[in-house]
Image: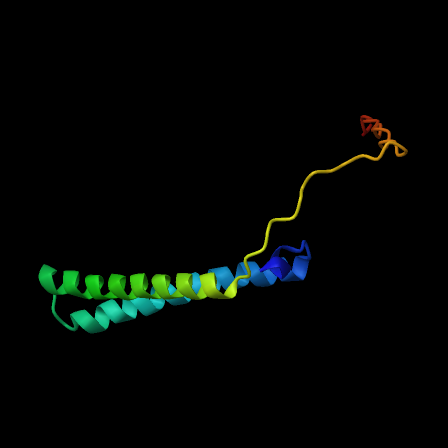
Length: 104
């Protein structure tokens, strides 16, 4: 997802919104699966069975997503982060900032 981390503000907002909504939707689906599996029973064994079913579904979705991501994401070498300075170029001079006290 190189485009998601390009530094553009709209893309970053879309990425953050997708993460928030995805987590909320995922939790709602798992809670629904647990509630449907448990039914109207209130004993601890039925509740444990409902949560176990929901957590197994979550584990299966995680494994499936990991396999799909491994197959889809291209395997490329990371770009070089070394910054070389050519002998004919000089670094920019430091900027001086003057702080003044505002008089009221």
